[in-house]
Image (cartoon, rainbow, N blue to C red):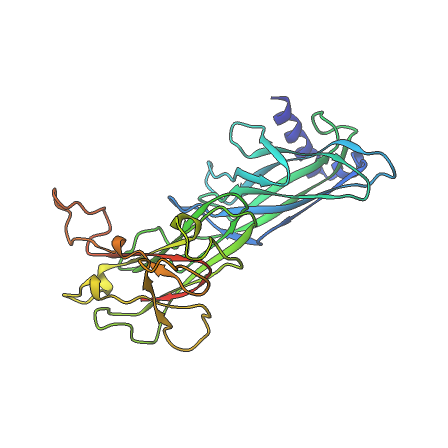
Length: 342
């Protein structure tokens, strides 16, 4: 109760333009977005929005024994219930201080002069809105801000990209698995190619962009067009040639029935991959994960036991999820990024 009231009072004071100068102390915080914007959440797709934070002792000698950052997210331009909820932190101990999960109190312990402490806080992207605003303040005691032990205060924004049938952007925070997809996660005649990316938890935070396109090359006579999914993720995942698959990037590709030729068989479908999206051609056919040396650097594999050609109708003995009638599904595992074409 008191923490929530304190944070709201600080925000009101900051909005009036006198909080920072009146409450300046011996601690200074800087907060910057990891990405300038991330995609909105939709259904099971929950992109992450992260901030890099640094707390610094600006005094001349004393060690600050309880250095903290407190703050609250709000969403601009969204529905009444749109919120960016705290998800994780790396490098600090953070707890939520309100029922909505949008206010946090992050501690880095003692803070010596000349030894700044960086950390990262991550929030889940809301389902609507144009930006996330993170109103924050640096604090160096255990009390409730505002007070005489507080440092600077500010608000840092991250933009929100609308749902896009061909692109999705997210942070992948350290030690947190993230799932996100293009469009609404279901292939339709108006969005006939959907990419679902599952990124496992890793020690190092990275960013990810998944972007789709239509290739001018002819993929297969079984298909009415040729689709691509390009992943841009500056990292690698998993140990090459080992199991389980959950340590690697998992990409699920969904192709709508409207793009599949009449009489086509999924068994004859070929998926292509090239590590350099700008290289000429379709790339190399993706091999089966029955090759136990895969996936490895620059060479993904497909779990062909999970290839699915959904029936044209949902029947009691052969049910089909709504929206998947006649569609195809493929699941690929990757050690690193690149472009997949089908």
